[in-house]
Length: 331
Image 1 (cartoon, one colour):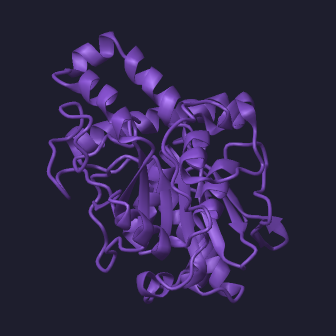
Image 2: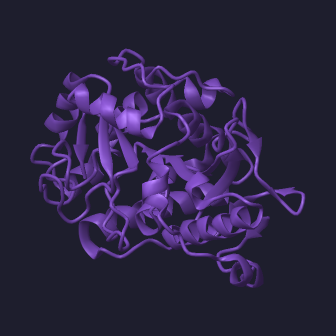
Image 3: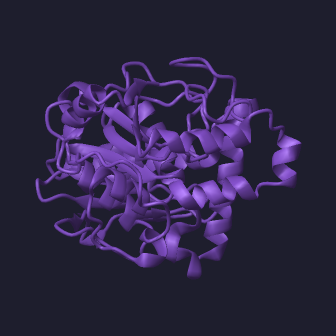
């Protein structure tokens, strides 16, 4: 089902099909897509009309379901895995290759990023894109339920801004998933959404994923640090990937930095983003092969981080593996 515009969500369909989410968190702890499937879905949304290898597009009334909101930049595709599970994948900032045909949408995504920073650091309010992402997830749940899918077979993912939107949707619905390089969020989880089935990856040294109240690296630029919480923590678990020594560059740059100083000299943060933030870096560090792969999106970054071979693991096993390696905390 296609959706365009910030307020057009086919209200009649939602009214007919919008069901509650009984036991989503508990059921989804049993069987999930793999880390590789989540990352490939999150990455495919950056490419033009792409579908990850081994997956198909979720359709409704014979058309591929997707969402594009030109006002706040929220974009999402919906994929079906080889195991017949549904992944709602949200697009990150600039839209990857899509920015070449939708520069206005890319700018809207940048503005949403700014709103997220102020939300986490000052206002505590949710950017409009969060509501758009949540409404689309509710529509997908309703449409999938109508086609015989259980809510426990529906998951969320995304990278960067897309990962943040997936994180927010998970916090409000209890859906399981993985957010790649997402910030913390100021939003309070809905009742029953404990986050035990959602994981955020944080590459050591990435200024985006480290922007949270429960990660120390960006202090004092990020919200005040509180171990395991604070004003804008990650929802769910945090899995640290890459090499811990890379965190020092970020810590050293952020140490004592003011917003004015960051505004006058943002280049070191930009360099760190180019080095550690893009999907190819996570693919390297998690031992995942991206398919489809485009060098303009996936070939940029530091590919020398420590590798944890978890691509074939489902979420519970991923959590267990990262915990055993001392690379896991709870937001």
